Image (cartoon, rainbow, N blue to C red; front, side, top):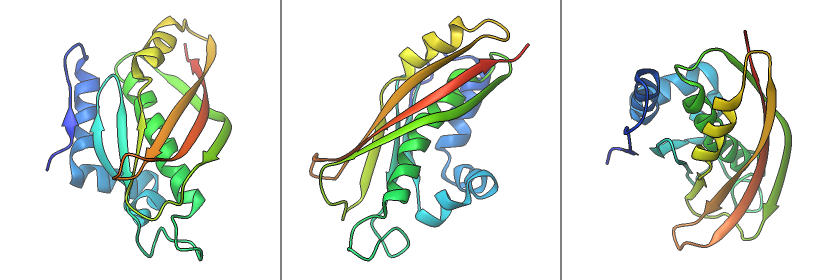
Length: 168
């Protein structure tokens, strides 16, 4: 099943970015080159649009800790990718930016012993932040990614604060 996308209101670079990120082969090779742990842990792009991003992480031997649940670092990586993909999408075709995670907080609610889907739904808010930046301006945004199991139960919630600076 192909990942869900929405392309209304996007510029050409954003449409291309979504196309690359939602193509499983291109995603795999891109992650291998830039974020090899995502390949090792088996991350998959479930959906990407201007509004939200969904990343799945399987429960398997490569993601498992000794307590028979998904390792916290693997969960954090999937959550961070769900926010970071939205950041890159928002910036695509709008000039050059630098971005950096400047704060990170996690909350755990249930044992992650099934496939987990991390969803960040702050794409529109993020676009407002990015579009408001003038050259050499900077701003921060805390993005929330919620991880849910197939039963719809919240397993974890991650708060990822990104700092953005528009380059001249």
